[in-house]
Image (cartoon, rainbow, N blue to C red):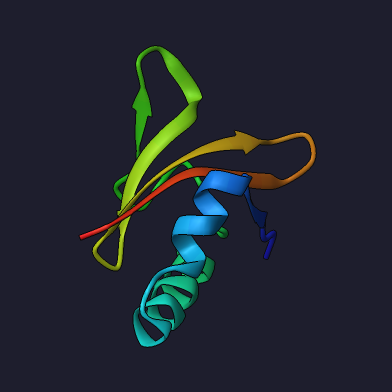
Length: 82
């Protein structure tokens, strides 16, 4: 199974690090099991007309990310905990 590497830009990483540790752990596990496996699926939707720029809700956390298909990387640029 191909798995995408998940990285965070500095702003998203700060929001990720500020999450409650238990919630962050659940979020990380869900992200690894969904978006990292299939970044175009799991209820994600493209932003505007850019299929590689996507929004998704994972474990109650809204994220925006970019898919780098040629390097198998998902770059999270926004994290909003509800």
